[in-house]
Amino acid sequence: MNTEVGKDLEKVKRLLDDASTVAIPTETVYGLAANGRDPEAISKIYLAKQRPLSNPLILHYKDAKSAFDDVLNVPKNANILAEKFWPGPLTMLLEKKSLVPDAVTAGKSRVAIRVPAHETCQLLLQKLSYPVAAPSANIYGRISPTCAEHVRNQLNTRIPYILDGGPCLKGIESTIIGFEQGKIMIYRLGSVTIEDLKSCTNAEVFYIESNAQKDEAPITSGMVKHHYAPNTPMFSSEDLDRSIDLSNCGYIGFDKPHPDFHTSNQFLLNDTGLMDVAASQLYRAFHIMDAKNFKRLYITWLPEKGIGRSINDRIKRAIQKNKP
Ligand code: TXA
Ligand code: MG
Image 1 (cartoon, rainbow, N blue to C red):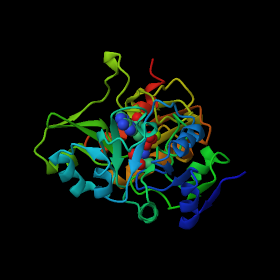
Image 2: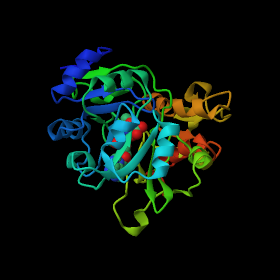
Image 3: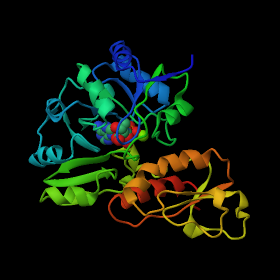
């Protein structure tokens, strides 16, 4: 059966109460939600997304109090950051209480918690008596969805309903952090920047790009080197190969068009140079340009600061698999 797209919060509540999965809007990307207390409901997320069972899920709460009620040993900095960034695109890894099912954390001792800011999502969470587990609402390894249509393109018939909350304001996933010996460790760069985190605590802030060189499993799957990738081979425009015919190649730029590509083959993330807007357009650009069946896609780097660093992180992972 085709997946329905709509705005019926009561229907979404009924479906979630009945252990179904539903795609929901958040300010970062759309999530594929299920009752975060019910392992059977959670298993349907993994099935619909074709996601490995070893990859844990973020729990989404209506407020900081209910989020912190599910975890132990909340450090002072977690409270400070919650005060500043929740509701919003920050996810914290903290020791879980036993009421959090192992199905959420894939057996790990820490659970990822966040309070989303999207208004429709908030209205839904306030109707529910449980937090919702939700990964991004894409097929595993594909591009995260930033509007209802992106979700339907990937998950049509696999889920009963998509709650339409319009385009996502932030457009890239939440920043994931943990706390180790008084330090703040960033496991995934996202919509909250390193500068944001540094601005409100005295703690040292470290970004762990990958722990893979130690032959360990990545702490979060966002650390996997290739991820978030379009199907069309994507390259950095720094590596432009002038020996190939660029007439059937696409270009994703920031604020300036590229003289070597047809105007109609280009997508500018924001022609006035606003990086926040560029972030909100990044996955939209990936989806749109991927659908044009170019031979190759080229993309520019953004300035390596603020949200630009998070955008560059996603670009790095998208082009990684095409590196020699
Ligand atoms: O913005 C977001 O974070 C979106 C929206 C829907 O909230 N969600 C999202 O979920 O991006 P997902 O599953 O696509 O990415 C979450 C990342 C994964 O890399 C997962 O491995 C990691 O968080 N993660 C979740 N729980 C974890 C845990 N207990 N320990 C380590 N990593 C965890
Ligand atoms: Mg994801």
